[in-house]
Image (tube, chains in turn red, purple):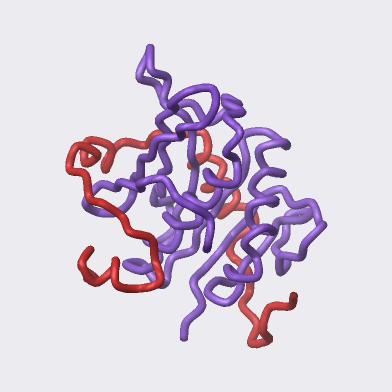
Length: 56
Length: 148
């Protein structure tokens, strides 16, 4: 797994780990949205990936 | 992204993020969360404000703090962070209202030039997925890091 030290060297934001936020790690803060996502997955699924590149 | 950023803090598994919006109407604590769905490697993205009185996090509130672009930049930043450790992940996002969904579209459009170099972006139209295009209304969005 990528470490935070490695992560911050890359083209990604500087994210500071705050252990006080670990209390949310196993809590679903937005249950309605997750339900919508699961409904989407059940009814539509994921895109069929094509080899062409995405346009402008 | 050149957008000046607030300090982004995250839990140790980079699933929940927090930052402080500090513009005109005062400080508002905002949370971004990527939640696993029933499908492997598909996460739901949502964000909202923490009510300083109740401690509840609300994704329907319109704080209108004059820093929408900064907030969207933070969400994109969190997206980069999550997909750095979950490069195969699909990220699903939809607004709690049509106006919030429009805000998501504005955010993708604003950073699209940069985002499309690193992500595949899809929009939902009539119960199917199409490649994202600017100026098109979508019901929801799905993004995935490009494999390089």
